[in-house]
Amino acid sequence: MASSTSQKYFSESEQSHLHEKQRQELMHLLQPYGARPVTALAEMNEPERCKWLFWNLHENIEEIRQMEPNLQARINSMQFTVSDGSDLLGECKLQKRLDLSCKWDLLLTYPNYQDEINHALGDGWINLIIADHAPAFPVLREGQKAYLDADHSMYPNQLFLEGWITDGVWQEMRPHLSAANPTCKTDVALLDNALFPVKRGFDFVAGPPGSIGVINMEFRAFSHPTERRLQRRDARMLS
Image 1 (cartoon, one colour):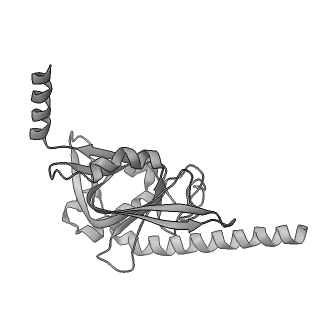
Image 2: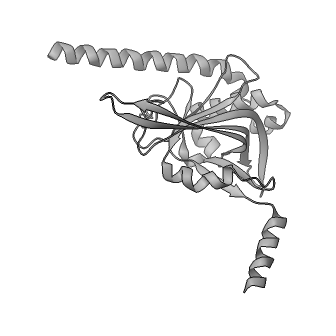
Image 3: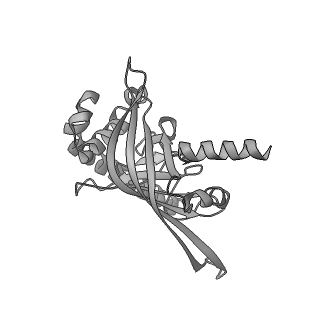
């Protein structure tokens, strides 16, 4: 029994060591971009900004958090998939998946500058499992909602958010995501206090080497100002 426990421990330890080694190798490749000053973001292209962001969230998290990074994904299109599934006991369950095509932006608050500065990061996807409890895949820690990853080997890349939401969140946002009115739009926001690098010392988040663990995400629905004015006018007329 002791031998089996020891074998399992060393297996997990070796896996953690390999994960950290892969992460460090990736960070080494991203360093020439990540070590550049924030003022250089305006001159970078979208893939270079992605490299800057991932390196700084891993290697420079305390300093970058002073700029209150806000990642926003503007939803372009939606695919909702329902399929029959079965668990280990052979019981059939509905499996629901939401795939959102989006455009990523990074908003930063510069020192001594009042307004946020917007930096485009390019296209990407948000892939979410809809379930009452955290799914077996993607692998996440307790309380974690998702992880943010990118294909750093093939730029220009896309950003991917892999995670899950409850059915309650889906029901609340579904009318906005499927709204026929072109003036309506939906964003998914990842705030700085919800982003943590997946590395040693941050054991409360999981994900591939070099990824960013996400413990919360916000869905934000907007409508065109003209539409809001019409709604207010109609409300006054009814009263």
